[in-house]
Image 1 (spheres, helix red, strand yellow):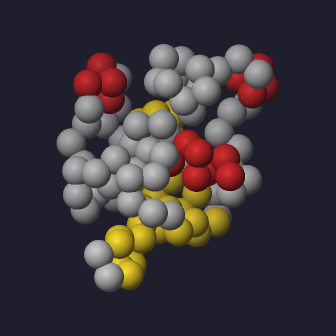
Image 2 (tube, rainbow, N blue to C red):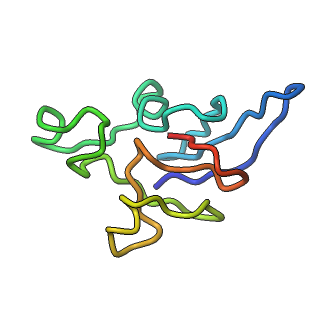
Amino acid sequence: MCQYTTKRQFGNLKMPKVLAQGKTIECVSKSNLRTILLQNGIELYNDGAKLINCRGIGSCGTCAVKVEGEVSAANWRDRARRSRSVRLSAFASSPFSYNRLA
């Protein structure tokens, strides 16, 4: 589960915070969530998906994360899935703007 917790601002640069697996991670707006999570030791894949996944291009669905709290409008990939709270971490969006976090 990933939870968008808050946004800190440095001048015009907004710094979103993401809570994942008990870790709070601060990242730059428009960062790729999948990349940020992997760089911070968050395990997105299990078993064979660690070896066989699309590496973030959005075609396999193995990096799906559950997003809690306020989120932006779903993109076409998310609308094709039944649950509004599940998104691919490569394509999740910031809840406070329509900028892509991941």
